[in-house]
Image (tube, rainbow, N blue to C red; front, side, top):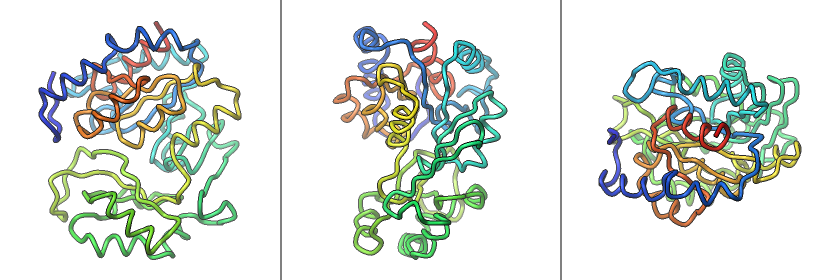
Length: 303
């Protein structure tokens, strides 16, 4: 089905989704995979359906398919690891409710094991001796600079921005390359990261779509944290998959055996077609949101 997402020509995106879909790519890729032991997964726009609801599909119908896939994977001893821009406090409750225990928060700043019994912190270019990363980033003035320079184009992602432990969170629509050039000139060590489309509007912004942005220390990322977790726990690349919906998630492809881009991720980011065509271990799911997530788990873990 076509999805109501902004972006390029839907017919062209549908062609690309078929070209990079499971039927085209999985038979060859599966030969290079071992039994999957770990799944790194984005949450919003990927594992979750509309409104962040795990049991609503894109049509806002109730579905048990994602829950069945999750339960069967966990019963099989597979570690399902959320890797999200959410804070550690937010992820703890999500993980606990869904039966998961290990997660990676704030786009890679925190690796959390056993629901918080062990936390590994990575402040990247700002150094791990930093006692309060969020405060340190705010003190640089970079957030105020971005808000003032791009007035009515970007703002704090309230109320979720009020519950941050490490990285400031924004929403809006800006030229990410331009912003990062300016940050490099005035605030070296920091970078603005695009974490995908938000399914909402803002009356205080003059933009045609909203994207989530994180102001991050350089050298920190989702895929770097996942690679470090794999190293610590002895997971081979061929034993790991990742699932996501954004450009930030696509970088997982360099660390895991297979990366699944849920179909809405392609439709919301049509510029990714070129990158996906060059990455042979990327599959675009037939399903959207949590049903695309379930499809990936069924194919790579449960089949």
